[in-house]
Length: 205
Image (cartoon, rainbow, N blue to C red; front, top):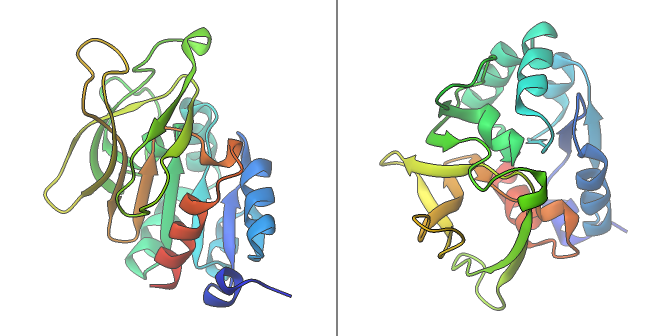
């Protein structure tokens, strides 16, 4: 029997070109939501919300451009489809990523710095206060994570990382702009489904 989350949202998609898309699909399944692995642009017409997962942002950009995803993403966002970029996905949907060598969707009014916290060996975990959720902190997993350095006037900051590295106190690691969501970390690698639940509601709204 589908949960209330599944009842609120007809279908979520996870871009399956590269990265940890399987973990997102498993989280949606655990929440009782209907989710599909999206491999072709025309499948975007069948979903209300799309996750662009973590992985390699350069590879995601090249593949998305090669298969014609970028214009279709822009079209569907204008029609109200929600998009959530996690880690590399947040880079892909940002309008400003200095030095990024490959195509971006340029959907969300944020400036993102790649590999802001170092290399793979510098991965870490942290508890984040997310006022939109209330209750307990969200335990976030950062893997070669980007950083949201600045956000436009229509962007709502959902969470900041206090003092992870010198000079990074108060850095933005989760933000929302209308039906767009970006997180620097990997909620799909935890058993806390609050970000996925929040995203499903964006897709319905």
